[in-house]
Image (cartoon, rainbow, N blue to C red; front, side, top):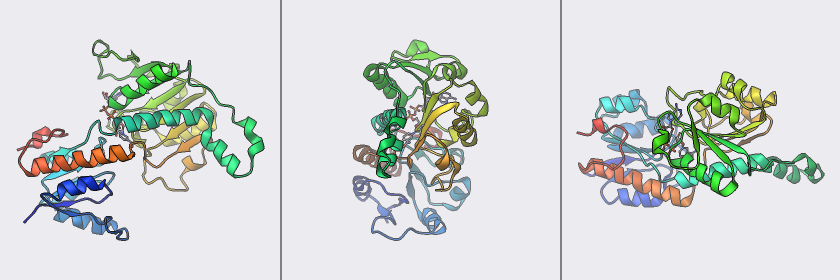
Length: 324
Ligand code: NAD
């Protein structure tokens, strides 16, 4: 019998094709099935030998019930929706797909920064509502000559720093306690304290994983230190920002704007206070979604699963200690 791979969320068809060379795949979305109940989806997980998840969560409780599960593949890099510790305890490797959407997310971060600096979403909304004559309300700021502060200097933000510095002539500072200045040779200047970055940045862009050390690192206190009129861009994880504190800072005018692709709660409810906050640009977690990146991600996730099922060492594994 072929191993059974459960794929609760849409992935590019090339990933399914690769898996089907050696496995049976259960992908309820594939033939246009109406959305299954959450409990039905969980039931499918408990029958599977392998699973590919995007935002679908896998808890320690799930792992207890998923007795056949041999490998979890994260379609992406942020593994905060998977209890990796519980997976390790059960010797289930968690494979992931680093670098495949670096360019997509980096370019999208710059797109958000540009849109925010020129209020493009608000101007477009005004025009479609017949308010063309309000055009003078939409005076923006230029990126050229401004200071960008980057929190977390990893794959995505290294690319953001290059485009911002070399393309837009921005001065770039970065805060990342895990990057040694001696090992870094890009255009950003590393600072030792987050507070320094907050005081310097006209634009603050967040690129850290969600961990206990980064949860709500942008909070009421940090937002009192931030440069007046700063604009925040978040394409990392929603939990990195205290959203109530952010809304307050926007309402009080301490922040000139915020562009958010990720939220503490996803999907973001339509009546969420963020939807009514001033000068915000919100998108539904799409920074990494380009055709190229989706194809590369699906192929890498599928390959990771096949490697584990065939007893090979996968290229990218979050918990190598789980490999037998
Ligand atoms: P990466 O691992 O290459 O970089 C993360 C960086 O954060 C590392 O350099 C690390 O040292 C640094 N870091 C960790 N803890 C820190 C702390 N407390 N303070 C400062 N820096 C800290 O990751 P990446 O591939 O560049 O991805 C970055 C983020 O983007 C992740 O949160 C990921 O989930 C998110 N992401 C979002 C989307 C999307 O569609 N919106 C797509 C891909 C990735």
